[in-house]
Structures are given as structure tokens and as C-alpha cells.
Image 1: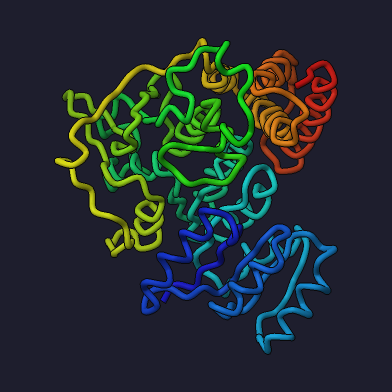
Image 2: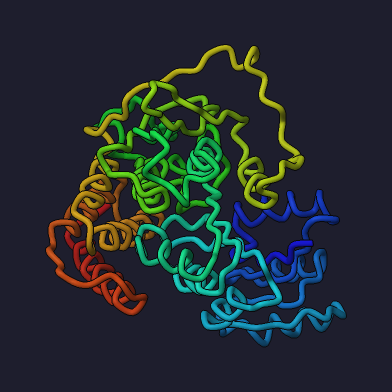
Length: 393
């Protein structure tokens, strides 16, 4: 039985992961949980799953959290703070780590799981964008297995040959094609986007997601981050990665081969499918999802992304081609800008302006250690905060 640590348990990915695990108590046990600040929900989850340990990342809430666990008579150990997240990720009691902490906050624990040789189920694309080759090299060196949870990357994972990781250059792969729903504003012009509100941007037509990733989907930055993630995880050149807008969200990605074949993974737009695949791989288990009915779906549409209305995707490709610190700076500027938009400090189109400004800075720095990555990220965030002063909502 797999002993699973779910980091970011109160988010949408964490909740879906726990749903799948609950369907298969003979295969999986929730052995550790974490949340950022949602103490009440984390206590409820501990009551339901009774993990060995649970972490509230905001250390100021430790006493409240521990008292709540005691009041329910739970044996779960209460920990708090960022270091505790790293310790849980590396703890030998847990063989599987679900990395579902949103944003740069999940980087250190993701690397800790890779160093500890875990089965790492990766939902934190920002960690891959920031750490780049460091994460993949750390996993390979320590015998960790990375299985992506993003629907697009899990689709690619399913369409690749089983021996791809051991022999990536000999399988005739010519192109990875990531699909994008187009978000809530597909077909809109930049002028129409000018007055978009956070609630509008979070109203995704296909997927139920957290607010940060919903904004990224609306700007197409989410797809840009996924392009960088695909390059890191699968080792293909940037020019061999394409994006197609597919509003039905049924074809989740495709892999093209030298003989002209394109293999695609199809399924209902439900994150429980890739989660179940990653948890049980190489086996297949019931995910509890609605079965795909292609007759009911009737049609599958594809179109090129509009890089004029949604330039964030182009910025991500540019950062990937530049390499070095550029992807770290891209992610930092985006996180700062999205937070500012959600807080009503800037407008929707200002998100791209903050990112563009950040990418114009030249940084010549090593990115081969966690400390170096964190330093670049910190400086990029400070610069992005300064840029915000020039924009207004």
C-alpha cells in the first residue's frame, strides 16, 4: 500500500487527489497532509483520513491547529512552517508525494521529495519552470520518479513510449502538442479585455480551478508555463513544442512521431483522470469520472492561439528560448502581477505589461542551486512590485 503525502491538500488538485485515494483504500493511505492557512479544512481532512502528520505552512497558526486536532482526539502530529513541508517531503515513511502547493512556495518541498527518491506526482508547474534542469537532474540522481499531474503533461506521459526516460533520442518523437481550452475569453480582442474583472477571469468554461491558475488560464500564461514545463520534463527543443486551442478540452495533448503518427490522450475534462493515472501507474484504476461520449461531444475544434490578444504565451516561449534566469523571472513577475490583479490594484491587461517589463531585465546568474534560484526569484519579485507602481486599474 502506498503511503501518500498530499502537499497542498486544501486546493483543487489536493481535493481531487483525496477523492481518488478515498475510492481505493486497499491501494493508498493518506499518511501526511498540508495546507497554507486553511486550518479548519485541514482539521476536517485530518478527521477524515487520520494521517500520521499534518503541516500548516503558516507557522503563526501552529497552536490553533494543534489545539483543534487535540479537541477531536486525533493522533495526527501537528507541524508548522516551510521547513516542516520539506521534512515531510523527504520523510522515509511516505513513498509518494503529491506536490500541489501553488506557485514558488512549493519549490523547496518538491526538490526535497526528488532528493529523497520519492514517486513525485507533480502539479506545481511553477516549481518546474523555476528549477528547470535542477529538478529533473536531482530526481534522476536519486532514483525519484516524476509523474506529471497537469492534464496536458500527463497526456504526453501516457502517449510516450515506456522507455522514453531511458532513451529519449531514439523513439522518433518530432513534436509535442499541448492543447489549451482558450480560457473564458477565447475570441476576445485586447480592447474587450481591458475591463475584465477577477470574477470574470476566474469563470473558466471547462475546469474548476483555484483563482491563481484560473487567471493564468485566462491570460494563456498557464499554457506558457506548461510549455516550459514540457521542455523541462521531456527534454525536447523549444521549437518542437506547439500549442493548439481546443475549446472542448477533450484532447488533452498529442505526441507526433517521425512516421507522421500523432498519438493523443482523450478524456472528459476532469483532473481525477490524470491523478488516478499518476497514483496507480503503470496500473489503471477507476477515477470516478464521467465516461467520455464522443457521439455526445459531436465535434472537436482546433485553432491557433491568438498571440496578439494574449501575448503572455509568446513571452513564455521567449523566456524558454532565452533560458538561464528568464523563466524564473517570468514566473515571479506573473505571480506578482496576478496577485495584484486579484487584489484590484491593476487591470487585466497590466498583467502582461508587468511580465514584459520583467523580461527586459538582463540577469546573468547561475541557476543550478536552490539558493541561486530563490535569490533570482526574490529580486524579480521586488522589481515587479516596483513596476506595479507605474500601472493603475
